[in-house]
Amino acid sequence: MIRLSSCGFQQSLNEDEKMNTPSNPIIYRPKQIREMFSWSRHAHENAMKHEGFPRPIQLGPRAVGFLKTEIDKWLEGRIADRDAA
Image 1 (spheres, rainbow, N blue to C red):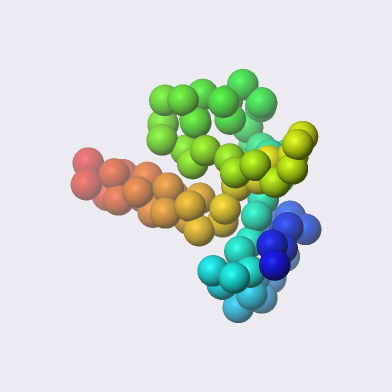
Image 2 (tube, helix red, strand yellow):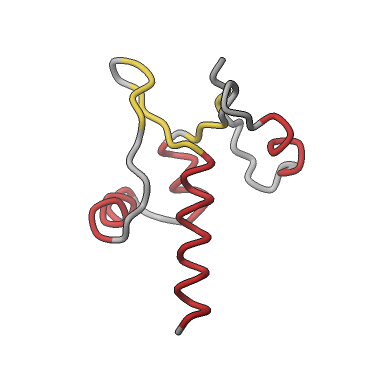
């Protein structure tokens, strides 16, 4: 079963973490990602092309989403890069 996040990024992340399992991944839609990071559509595309931001997964013929686990790993890498500098 795939569960789409209701976004509300400030919404209880602990609750999301409890439900984020391989058989029940949390998936963010593109609009939710842009809201989380305060990105324009162009900035989001640039992050995917040039900054290693995770690529979307196809959810349906006209719908894509991003796995929370992949976004978390990307953020951890950015933090590690910052701390190494």
